[in-house]
Length: 290
Image (cartoon, rainbow, N blue to C red; front, side, top):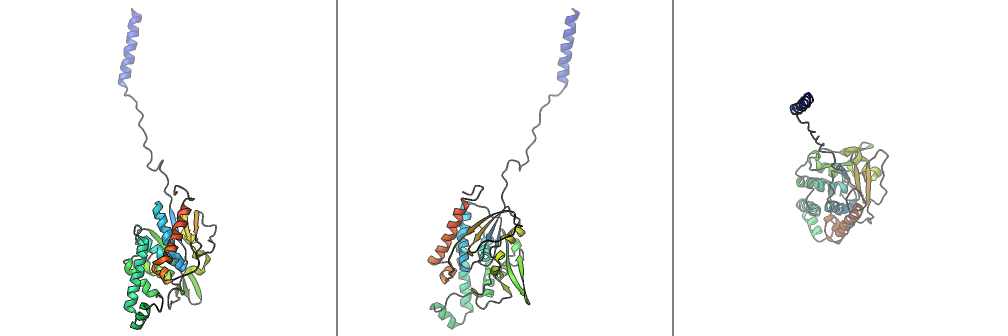
């Protein structure tokens, strides 16, 4: 009888003790938001110098947009600065139409500021399309709404050479008046009539012609996609440690009014060369561009 009472007492004690302790549950630890998410690759687009051949940059950029490649920053010199500036000021706009609008605005201002005899010669096609750097800068400033580089929808930089007495120094621009910076970078005496050589196109410099080195120093990207229309080898030092994908275009040197106006077969040919080369390159670039 006493054994039964002892067993019952123990059973009751165990039952009461189990009821007195709250039930332990494991609280799940939330994962950090970044855990498991793919790292977004920061890509800088580099656009080389190249005169009229640089219009192929338009096709190359359109191929990037078609594939949905997100560009975080652009470094362009000379014609690369012109096309890059048009792109970064309105990344979602039709780049060909923006270039044509720029040239049309320039031609209109030229007609307004040109003596009558000169106008007649232009209308009769006795002379070609001529560019004057200061006028080009003014037209770009109007088109860009007097934008400053640091306030653009996309990061942008360019460079040029500055003459100071008997010396020439490199000037990199990551802030300030966008139109001024582009006009100085594009100031090529072979394109611009009566070019003042205080600030000049940096294309004579092998490193600045395809500015991979400067682009890495300024933006520190994970990857650089460099469009090279110069016909020369891309050059950079070992200080550039990110991935580099060069899209090298072989285009004969030929700058015509038709090309520069953004119309006709010559322009279409350049556009297609740029588009096709970039589209092919993207199939070989990882991750996930193809």
